[in-house]
Length: 96
Image (cartoon, rainbow, N blue to C red; front, side):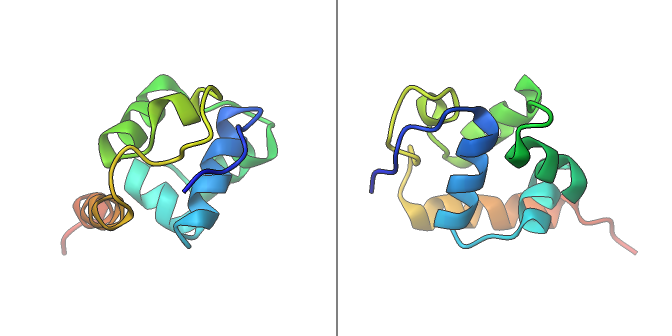
């Protein structure tokens, strides 16, 4: 699956999030960020730090897509990316 080449990392994050049918809350939890932070990236108000982009790469999001150099959003099969996101969300959830 190919999407259009994004114009910014925030646009790439939003496109991948929508493609994967995930909420801003899901992305925020997986990255250890706030939903507001993800919203600011997606709107182009702020740019994500490299540490957040690295976490997305590790989950299987294509590095070149996040850097606006490719139309291919995923480096791994969608199912693997979904599993990686779910695992990241679970590891960010505090235990009682």
